[in-house]
Image (cartoon, rainbow, N blue to C red; front, side):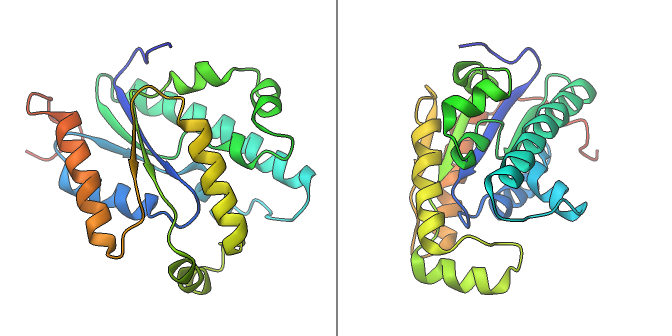
Length: 205
């Protein structure tokens, strides 16, 4: 499996409503002197007006766009902040779980392989989606979230299956208290980061 030639990239992944963006923000604040948070490509596209219409053609157009933007935004961050540690809100692999014709077709259409994309990340933290009750509550508060619980659960399972082939993946189950979920991620990151990392170039002295 290839290794990134710049800094370390830690991917936060999981199904819909797993808490990825919230936890990425928490990690960015807790470790502002040790890592840089890279924003989610899908959110950038939605905020920019990319349509979210149903149907395979639109899904493929969107996931293809996410893949290429994700690749280039990672390149931009790595080039601007060499040898830094990055927390990513999803990675290039995630699109394979959403692709209508399955992961093999996704990687083929993107001109890459599953192994090559898994190799972009030094560590993966998989966050399980919220329970059905919590999911429906958060869905009602978030108009951008279109998947129902059954679809969200399916995507959670498919995403985990694909990422599970990464050699350094940690699974964080859904918790009754979201705080407990955050604490488990913090424990994983403490072990990953250690105490000898240089300060982030964005930190204030």
